[in-house]
Length: 405
Image (cartoon, rainbow, N blue to C red; front, side, top):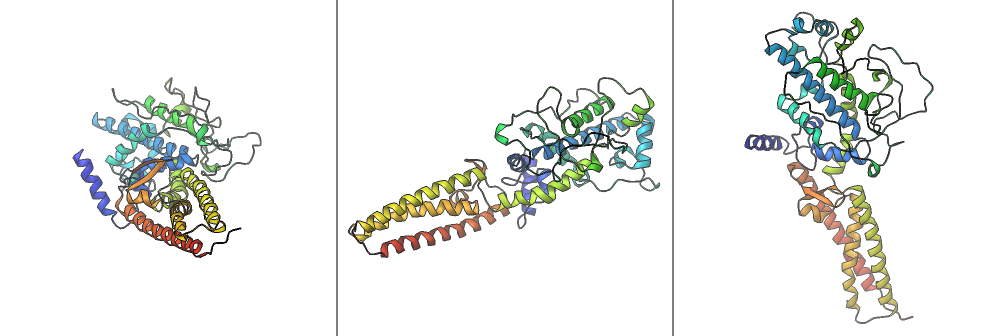
């Protein structure tokens, strides 16, 4: 625990004057309110958490494949002896496990391009593998046409147009109406990992996220994610209930370790370029959720209406002394505070208390140093703005002469 805390402190010092990167968030190096948990909640509010779920599950699948290859090498056998079909596939097509399976980069073997997995340390991969228990609700997405792993386009009927981005909200079910459900993401290692475990892991990912039906067996929920046509997978011909026997099944099994890597990279880039900048804007420059900001807008308008009604009553009843109008400074301050908090999605009182909302009206401590500095600066500006507007409004109505109707 102390080592983990020291690592977190070292990473926090490295980000003393900058915002975290997407890789740092995924590898759980960041602290609230810009950590992986908050990013998941942010995607959940947009109904797009399935993309992050898919990335984490594929990361877990790749960790499982790495563990299998390491078990083989620890047994004294080479991958070429244990799984010649995969060795030949990796030698011809390239693989993200090149260094693990023992491919020599100097023999002319085709190597895979840089992947998100290569950006993470072994400890980071273990952290990512453990995040399965933190994932909850799922979101649906429209049905798509697919292609097979071999690149053969599926022939199907004409389908309705669908979104061209993974983060489109069209056709999604609101988060409030979704049931929290989760398939197990961590396969217990009470015994050595087998190839059937790899097939079971890939099969679960396919039927949960990539199947045109988009449904997990035994569940009525749709978790299918959007993928461009070139990355869609049409079918999964293997089964975890029996070992591959035909030559075609054995050849397809060789693709299992790398099957979802291209889709994982696409989801990573989509989140990094689309959702992550919006997440930073929401959490590094504000501390309110949309629902909480909306409640503040309604409360601010109601309080402002009450304050103006009382102030006009004092004017047209010519209540003396005029100094009684100064008491309306209180509702004006509250109203303007709520209205400006809605506009900036930032509550300065919460910031001064070191709190940021995770879900509506539930807060957690701000522990990321640079984010805390950014929010404190914005909170001071919002406080000055609230004070100036409140004083101006109060003085204007105080200066109006009374006139009894």
